[in-house]
Length: 341
Image 1 (cartoon, helix red, strand yellow):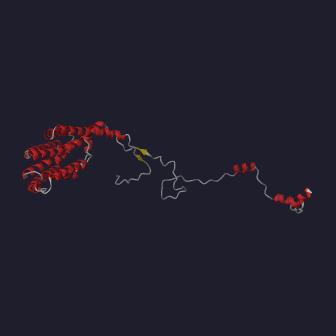
Image 2 (spheres, rainbow, N blue to C red):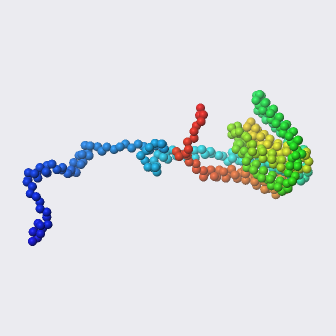
Image 3 (cartoon, rainbow, N blue to C red):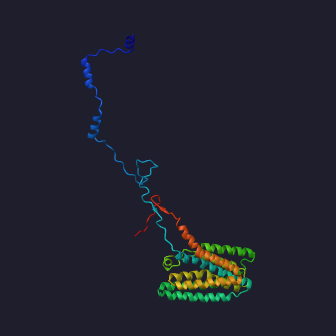
C-alpha cells in the first residue's frame, strides 16, 4: 500500500531514450568547480576604475558626496602664525603713552579749575607754554638737520596756520565767552567729562614708544584733535573775560594738540631722552596741581590709576596671550595680492 501511494503521488516521467539523455547532458553547461574559479581569477584580472583624488574646487564635478571630508583637508592648518612675542618692558613703555596723554588732558582741566575757582592768571601759563613750544620745535628742527626745500615749505605752512589760529581766537573770544550762557554749569561739567572720556578712548594709541615702530606709523589724530578743541571751547565759555577765554583756549591747543605732536616727532627723530624729560615734567606738574587744588586723597587715586595702567595692564595683556588661539587654514577667504611688483 505504501509503495502504491508513493508511486501515485509522483508525476509520471516520460520515457526518454538513453541516446537523447546523453546528448542533453553534453549540451548543458557544467557548473564551475572551486579550482576553476581560482584559475579563472588568476588568468583574467578584475578591471577597476581609477578614482580621481578629491580637489578643493567648487566648480569641478567630482564623484564625492556633499558632506565628504578628505584626509588632506587639514593638512594646511596653521596655528598662531601672526602672533607676536611681547616683552613686559616694551609693553610698559607703550602703555606709558596712555598716561602721557591723560596727563595732558588733566593739565588743561586743572588749569581751568585754578582760573575758574581761584582766579589764577591765564596769561602766565599760556606765555610759558608758548615759549616752551617754540624752543621745542626749534630743537626738533636742529635735530633733523634737514635743509630740503620741502621741509622748509612745510614749516612755513605750519607757522602760517598757527598764526591764523591765534587771530581767529582773538576774533571769536567774545563769541566763545557767551556761547553757553543759557546752559547751566552742571551741563557744562557733564559735557566736558564726556568729551574728555571720549578723547581718551578715541586717541591714536597705536604709536609705539620705540623709534623703529614710530617711523613706520602715520600720526593723524583727527577726531581726538576736534574733541580736544571742543572741550577747550566748552570750558572757556564759563570764564569771566574775553582775555581769559583767549589765553585758555590757546593753552589748551598747545597742551592737547601740539604737545602730543611734539612728543611724536621727538620719538620719530630718536630723541628718546627728550621724550622722557617732557614726560617727567608733565607728570610731576599734574601731580603738583592735583595736590594743590584737590588734595592728597585725589593724588593717591591718580597714582593708583597710573600704576594700574602702566604696570598691571601690560601684565594682564601678557597673561591673555597664552589663551590666544588663531587658526588659519584652507577654509579662510583668499586674499588677492594687488600690485605685488
